Amino acid sequence: MLSEDVIKSILENLGKMEGVKGVVITTTEGIPVHSTFPPDVTEKISAFAASLLGKAKEMIKEVGGAKVTFITLDTSEGELLISSEQEYVIAILR
Image (cartoon, rainbow, N blue to C red; front, side, top):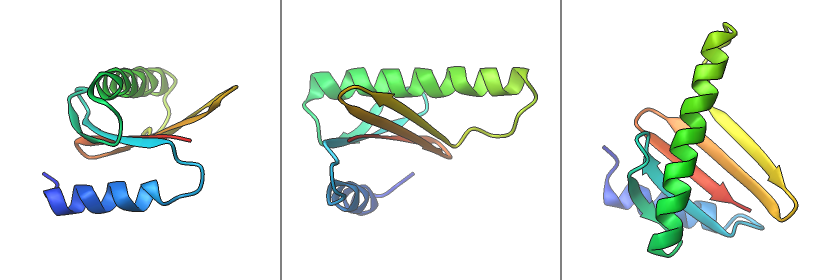
């Protein structure tokens, strides 16, 4: 389990990156741990990121691929970056 200081440090460092609109740290089950977004947005992003990561892992497993560690979604309004480490998922909007 990440300490509160580590979580704050991660959010602070990611928030300093150019173009970052917000960051959500969630469990792999989609339960929000910490976020720079309002609660309603945090819940939506947490659930979406965990679900998308789960589906990507299923797809890669089906085709005999390796471990999924990073997903990038490009949209007309920016990017959603999703990274998975152990029991946590980090979603960055930029």
